[in-house]
Length: 121
Image (cartoon, rainbow, N blue to C red; front, side, top):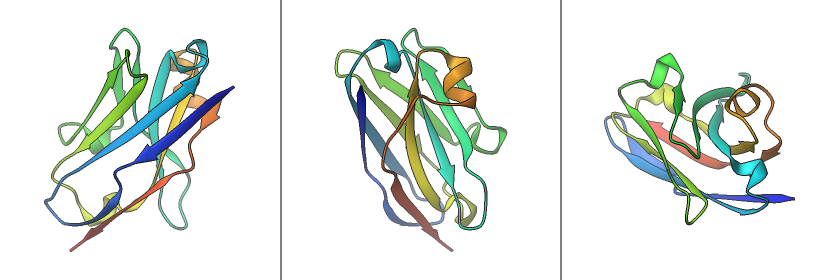
């Protein structure tokens, strides 16, 4: 079993930044790959970024150059630094975990409860 606890969401003006954190507990097998998804009202949940314990990363085109995913393996924590935020980045952001990059990018094994990010114009 894995528990994922997100923090760091909030309200920010366009152009601002937020850092999201996700602390994982439980099996490290299932947290070899971790990622962030987001879901805006009326839209499907989409992958934002993912990272493996070895440091390989994957980003959605819409956030490349603005968001950075990183992890601290010793703390089993993944971070999402969001810069140059836009109103269209407004969504609930979910942490996800799975044994592989492919799996976390398509069908994660575990989900966090989500944290709201709201970007005002």
